[in-house]
Image 1 (cartoon, rainbow over the protein chains, first blue to last red):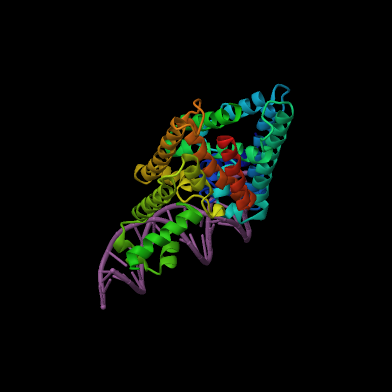
Image 2 (cartoon, each protein chain N blue to C red):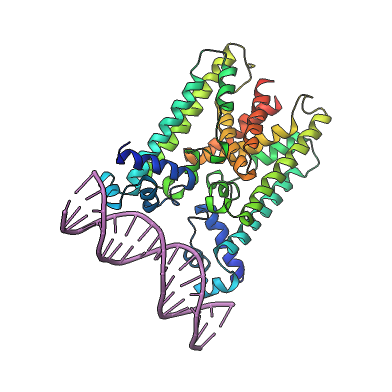
Length: 184
Length: 184
DNA sequence: GTCTATAGACCGATAGAC
DNA sequence: GTCTATCGGTCTATAGAC
């Protein structure tokens, strides 16, 4: 892994752990093993490096979601597999946590990938829910868009509650509750 | 409002807007109109002041929730009223946002009120859901604790999605989706 | 490409006069 | 109680040698 790559990966980790405001160039340099001059050679500054890191985290989230959602089985099974997929719930969502970062939300460039990611994910789930409603997996009254939004919210809120409680089990419980309502 | 009070209220606002890491003593002093010496006269330092602010936000959240949940009507109506209560969704949850703050979660004293708040809220909702199940508002298969966890997660995740989208309507949509599943 | 040196501002806090 | 002065350290770069 070359220096540029190590800078991006270290920034990804730090943004995940400490957010944008809590991540300093110095900390990035220490974790990546790159020096001051090296970092500023590869990137103009903290915002540009953060953008590279955020873009990659967003693409990663999307790819992982698609891996579960893009299957061929019943819609219910695919959504269940996605929600129950193994996650380190106590770490939280690398993209969702950025919504709490005022400096990220104030910068249109940094904010766009965050916005796009959740728009895509909600849309993807809404499509699946609509499909499930057509083929009879869900009843006809189900609202695909509202339900998809609620499911994504359960994921994001599940992380919050798991961190608050210091227990990944709380995340599982939130997912169980949501799937219990969806599939009864 | 005396100086001590202004310091606490200013800190509450700043923690809400910018989190613990993003809130400096200097910013607190500017917003409250208190000087350096004044702040350190009333509080030992940033952690102690933050604790006073967090405790108050936690108590406030609890009181506001109880105002909706503690009524006498059908459980479904009370839960619906709580979830749909007027909120500034784009500001997010003043307590939930602290779970993303590594320095808050690393300090047991600062973390306790966050943990307690969500434990209480989940428990309160679980009790109501159990009550609703007994009196026939919900079907017998409903899991009160898992469902309560999912509902609190929808709130917290709804804030995340609303901020990501820059639209409070997304919060409403998540709530609609959750209530749609709960009350169908 | 990477290094060291330097910069001006801010960080969180302490000291001591008033 | 509130003020100003000061502190060592960090923040986010920039400059320029190698």
